[in-house]
Amino acid sequence: MYDLIILGGGPAGYNAAERAAHGGLKTLLIEGRALGGVCLNEGCVPTKTLLYSAKIFDYAKHSAEYGVKFENASIDHSAVIDRKGRVVKTLVGGIGASMKRAGVTVVNAYGTIMGKDASGFTVKAGDEEYKGAKLLICTGSTAAVPPIPGLREAVDSAFAMTNREILDMKNVPEKLVVIGGGVIGLEMASYFNSIGSKVTVIEMLDHIAGPTDSEISKILYKNYVKKGVTFLLGAKVTSVGKDCVNYELNGKEESAPADAVLVSIGRRAMTQGIGLENIGVLTERGAIVTNDKLETNVSGVWAAGDVNGKSMLAHTAYREGEVAVNNMLGKPDRMNYNSGPAVIYTNPEVASVGETTETVKAKGLDAKVESFTLKYSGRYIAENEGGDGIVKLIIDKEHRKVIGVHMIGNYASEIIYGAALMVDREMRVEQVQKIVFPHPTVGEVIREAMFMI
Ligand code: NAI
Image (cartoon, rainbow, N blue to C red):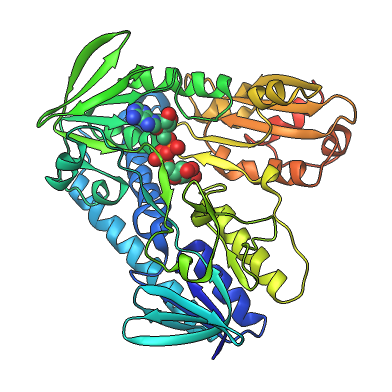
C-alpha cells in the first residue's frame, strides 16, 4: 500500500514524486516509457540541444561581423542528433538516480486506474496491481494530428513527422514544410533554416507565435523572413500529398513542395486509456478539470502538467506537481497562472510573462504599454550586430504595478524569471527602480525602462 501513486514520469510526475517522498509519503511512480516525459525525451531538452548547435553555426557564419574569420564552417546534423541522444541519456539517468535517492519506487510499465474503495485507488501496471491512498495523474499530452486528408498516411510513411520523430531524423530535408507557426513550429523552423533547409511555415492565423504579444511576434517574423524562412499566413491546409502540402490562401488552392513535413498544430491531453472512467474523473474538451490546488472532482485525485490542459509548459508542470503534493501534505498552496513565464528558444529568443497588449485590451485594463529598445544595453550592442530586440513593459496605471514584461533578444530566456518575480510579487515600478542590476547586462534595460515609463 502506497500513500501516493503517480501516473506518468514527466516533469510534473517525477518532480512531484521527489517532493512527496521528501515530505514523507511512500510514493510509487509509474511510467511506461523513459523517465522525463516529452520534455526530456522529445521536447524541451532535445530541441534546446539542437538549437544550441544551430546558434554556434549561426555565430560562425556571421563571425566576420565581429572581426573573427572562419573558413567554410559546416554543421554535421547527424552528429548533432547523436549529441542530443547523449544529453538526453545523461538527464534521464539523472532522474532515475534522483528517484532512487529520494526513495521513490519506479515501475516501468503503462498504468491503468482500475477503481477505488474505502482504502484508496487500485492501479494496474504490467501484470501487477498497486494500491495507493492518493493518486496524482501526470500523463501529459501527445501531438495533435488533425483529420487533414492524406496527413495520417503521410505520418505512417514517415513523410510527415511530429516533434517526436523529427528529433531523430538524421538527414537534412532540402525543403521542409511546417504546419503550424506556434512554439514547436518556430523552434524547429529556426533550427532547420539555420542548418540549410528551405523552410516554409503554413499558419492559419494572420500572425506567428500564437498568444505572444503582437509587437514581439512581428519582430520575430521580420527576423525569420530576413533569414529566409517563408511564411504562408492565413493559409488553410487542405491536404497532404506524397511530396507536397496543399493549402488554400486568399481563396486560391496552392501547393508547397516538401521533402519532409512537420506537424506542430498543438497538443492533446493524454486522458484516453488510463481508466479515468473507472473512478469518474471529470474531463472537459479532452483535459482533466482541476482547480488551482490541482484537485480533480474526485476526492484524493489530483492532476498536474499537460494532462489538465491549462498551460502545457514543463515549468508550469513542475510547480503544479508541487502544489498538488503540498496540498496532500496539508500545506495549503495554490497555482498562480498569471505569473508563469513563457519562452521561445529561437534566435533571437522570445520571453514573456503576464498581460500582453492584446489581453490588456480584451480585459479592458487601465495600463500603460511601452516598448524600449535593447540598444540601451551596452552588452546588447556589443554582442548583437544589427539587433532589433526590445523589452516591453505593461504597467497598471492605478498602482504602477508591473503586470507584464515581454522581450525579444538573446538572454531573454534567462532574464525573464526576474520579470516573473516582479509580476508574481506585484512589484511597483518604484520598487524595481531601487534594485541594483548587474552592469553591463541585457537585463538592466528592464530597470532603465522603469525610469522612462
Ligand atoms: P501551439 O499551440 O504553440 O501552436 C500551434 C499553431 O498551429 C497555432 O499557431 C495554430 O494557429 C496553428 N494551427 C492549428 N491548426 C492549423 C492548421 N490546420 N493549419 C495551419 N496552422 C494550424 O502548438 P505547438 O507548436 O504544437 O506546441 C505544442 C505545445 O508545446 C504548446 O502548448 C507549447 O507551449 C509547448 N511547447 C513549449 C515550448 C517552450 O516553452 N519553449 C517548446 C515547444 C513546445
